[in-house]
Image 1 (cartoon, rainbow, N blue to C red):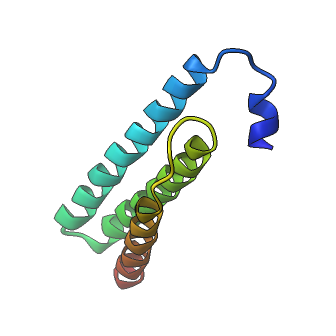
Image 2: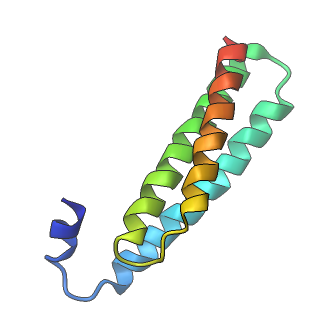
Length: 97
């Protein structure tokens, strides 16, 4: 579906910029929420922070894979590393509960 939608547009420079911007923002948000979770002293907030880190990891992974269809070359190790981080964050979420 993504490819079909992209074919409807002419020049993709704005789309490329927006996609790259979303990837950068998601990566920054992952670092922010992980730092918040690690620095938190209350379990109530920790589960929330780890959950936000997980959401941003999935956003980062999704946008990265979509960007590879059109704008950048896929580096499989990046996707693998994100998967491993998601597993570690899932462990932290369970511990926070």
